[in-house]
Length: 205
Image 1 (spheres, helix red, strand yellow):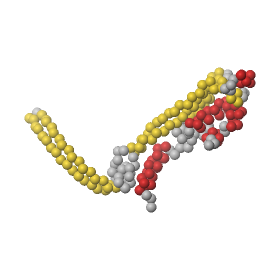
Image 2 (spheres, rainbow, N blue to C red):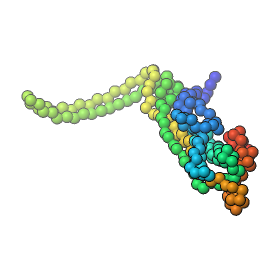
Image 3 (tube, rainbow, N blue to C red):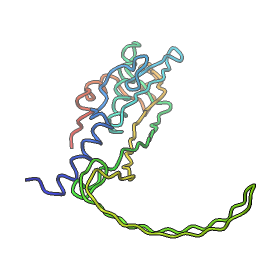
């Protein structure tokens, strides 16, 4: 038999899974037209490129930034260079909020639950009205109580916060002479050999 606490968490888990789409981290792949995740690169000059990587909400920030570094190294090698330097680099966090109906307690009501509920209400009213044929004055009060079984509606909702990261940078490709004088220079071959997609998404702890 499931405990009451376990049964209470089952609908929430299912609802969150449906809302999130049970997504997995974004793969290391180009961002194609119409897609929202992946890497892009654009040549600005002969030796300057803009590189980006955008992940979904299941992709950690460290993975997104690692994929940006890997793509920068690949662009450097593809252009015939072996060293580069970051001229600018940043990471944006984009947060969205979604709501899903609260599922409540399956024993005592709530959205999607079957249970027993009771309630009590009391109200009063007072009004003055005028019309084409006279005017009137009225006052009334009343109360009520009821209980029963059924599928009650619970207006509570759960708020789901999702954050995805986009890392972007401009890189400058360096000749061997320039790289020798630049303390921030990175060797593309070293980056590529250390940052495979598997190593980036599953860093050693």
